[in-house]
Length: 392
View 1 (spheres, helix red, strand yellow):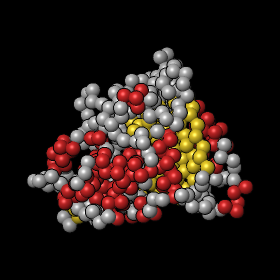
View 2 (cartoon, helix red, strand yellow):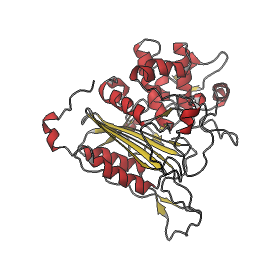
View 3 (cartoon, helix red, strand yellow):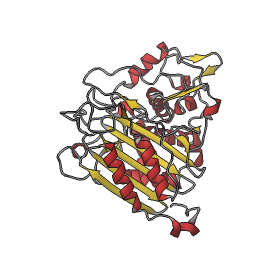
View 4 (cartoon, helix red, strand yellow):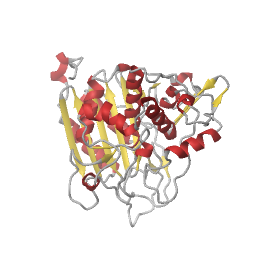
């Protein structure tokens, strides 16, 4: 059950939630996506809209039951499980990763500073972003498998002392998922089903889509490979879901998730460096999978970005205003006859525009756009969202 809006007496002054439609349409058009879904939750109100097409030329608008790749939004499901298992005393935030390593595997560290589980969840472990490049033809989010990453880990020399720098790491979250599996003595997919998706009624969220679900997967403007089992990247990137299921997730995040799951655990000002955490704006705080950025009224936006396999995904929450947004969009098709650009093409801040949809339904001013970052393309594309092979 959602708690009352903190400004319930001012509800009449808030914009109608349907105003999100025009803002979403603008975001869709400017992104150049093939298809997009958007969910906005405010108190007990829910707005959904699909834009564009389920696949190039399909003529079908995405629906609440269209299958989506959540990409790195999978990480906030992992951090939610982390908090739940910590509440059950099965793990602690400061447990060393070594405790959950396979026999004879030595986890790297720095003298007096082992990698602990909260380092993995806040991207402060010193572990690189990826194990390496997947072999050619490998389906998205199936590399590396669990044995491979644990063979790779002992060979690494940490780039920093754990806790001193924040550098985005996908493999770090996959290792966190492995640790949670071992702590609970259950496969990660089973653990997520029992603790999260089944209790919330998220019937189409998981890692192993059936043929019916794969037929409903949104398709980007180019072939992104097969719809397949993605349990190997369960902690970092592998979740499939629908807008209907994510609506239930947003309601949980606003109304039932323990506050400690969305809290700030690292102040970026105390770090020597941060990298890869600012896609939606400069972080004012780093949480367990979440980033915090400042809204125009001084409140917090708690957000998570995602991208890969032809998708870009985003969740942002305003606990102060009891609102949340989810957006998932597929890349547009390449232009077969591109004209050379007269000047470098500025990067569209998809996440920043989504933040402004959230702020708009709260009656707040939009965030100032960041300085444009030119992208020089030898083969310009019609879509403004660049192809995402690297997981975000």
